Amino acid sequence: MSKTSSTTLQRGERRRITVTLNGRERTGYCESRDLLSDFVRHELGATGTHVGCEHGVCGACTVHVDGVAARSCLMLAVQAEGRRVDTVEGLAPDQTLGDLQRAFQRHHALQCGFCTAGILMSCADYLKRVPDPTETQVREMLSGHLCRCTGYTPIVAAVLDVAAQRNGCSDGCSKGSSKKEPEHA
Image 1 (cartoon, rainbow, N blue to C red):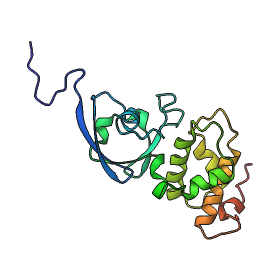
Image 2 (cartoon, rainbow, N blue to C red; image 1 turned 90 degrees about the horizontal axis):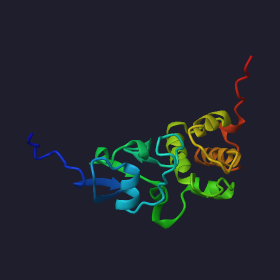
Image 3 (tube, rainbow, N blue to C red; image 1 turned 60 degrees about the horizontal axis):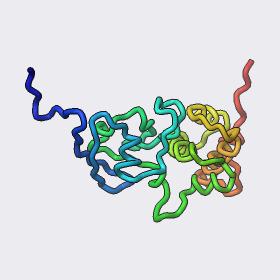
């Protein structure tokens, strides 16, 4: 019979994990096999993160890990130890709606709402990296999400609206939305 080291967890043993969740240090316990999505939902109570396919395909579980969009169903909770994790609850300060959430509301960019949190997190990450996207670019980014309720058009409009506002265009005239799309020969 082999001896196990003191750092090896036995099945069912729980490990203490500390993350910075939405700007606040939080600690919880998980088994070494627990997914980050389950940890933030069930252990830390951030239930805005939804789990859909559990294979990283649908995008419903998207969160930010150290400022970058990530599928929380593809990451173990133990991998988040000491890292910053932001969920949809962290998009809005002081229990209000952030500009992206307000645009989703204004453009009716949600249906049942199940996938909305993940889409919002991907859009927030994308707008940080691409502050003035074209419609085609937004649609391409959204192709990483599966939603059965909508044709994505209101979501695209909301993202372009936020980009325009953030770029100082108050009448909804995003440079990105007025850019001519490249023609395909």
